[in-house]
Amino acid sequence: MSETEGMMVRGSDGESARSGDLTIPLPVGQGLTEPDGPPLLGLASPGRRLPEAPGAPARPGVRGPPRRGRRWRRRLRAVLLSMTLLVLLGVVVFGGLLLGTPSVGDARALAHAQDSSHHAAYPGPPVPARFAAALVATEDHRFASEPGIDPIAVGRVIVARLAGRGDQGGATLYQQLAKVLYTQGRSGLAAEAEQVALAVKLKFSYSEAEILRLYAGVVDFGHGFYALAAASCGYFGSPADRLSWPQAALLAGLVQGPSADDPLLHPSRARAREQHVIGRLTATGALRRAQAATALAEPVSELVAHAGQGCTG
Image 1 (spheres, rainbow, N blue to C red):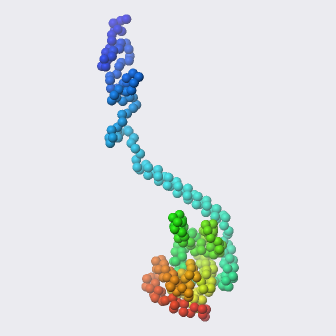
Image 2 (cartoon, rainbow, N blue to C red; image 1 turned 90 degrees about the vertical axis):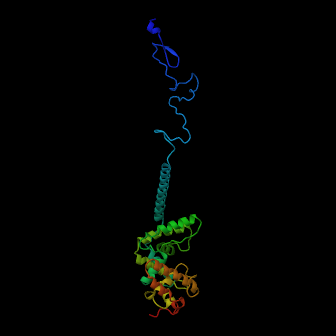
Image 3 (tube, helix red, strand yellow; image 1 turned 90 degrees about the horizontal axis):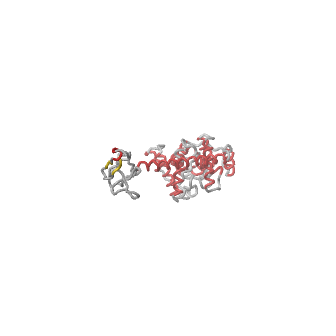
């Protein structure tokens, strides 16, 4: 053995190795471990970090807890996905309703049959502008723009039913006409769903003027007066084309409760409905406040002063 080969190299930890040994001891504190034991106290093993002190700021490159914004984005994606699925389900269900309900091409024939059974003339006279405005204002103020149903009203009804608040109304004139012509005497969710589909079909099958004429021709106005022509002659002794604003409002207020709001039997209830309709006409801009005040100045007793005399001209 040469002298060089026999020389020992002493490391900083006090251990020694031969100079020919390529393994040079590392100094203490560089991740050394005791043989067959845990890392030295206060030293980190390779690839392992010591726990951070509570409250210490995160070091660069160290991932902290998920940010609040990420949680909100995940929730938003879940909500959007749920809404998309609900919309798709609604489209499928509505498509099935359209396919499963009959055509509305026979609406005129059905209206004629109902008028005949009530001894009412068919077709009735064109709906006068004042009655049309009063009816639309109180029953369906989106009549001209909606697709046969009022999505806002439908949403309100669904929320109300889920909350257990019962029927909140919201049926459009198209739905009401579908109920009278096609589902009369039936109730429940199945009948209401059918009315929705039929309402859309009516919307795209007939003009607005004809829808109003069909509606006015099959509505019961109470006291044995069926259809607008008979109601106008019966209550006021004048044809429908001569209706004043208060008369038109009084008749439009009867369509929801013709017996309960009968102006000859229950004038106070009829007055309340008339006031409601006049208020709706004012809110929708069909009447100015001064016109509304003038209309309400005439008591119900004067409006029906000629009841029972029939039309004289």
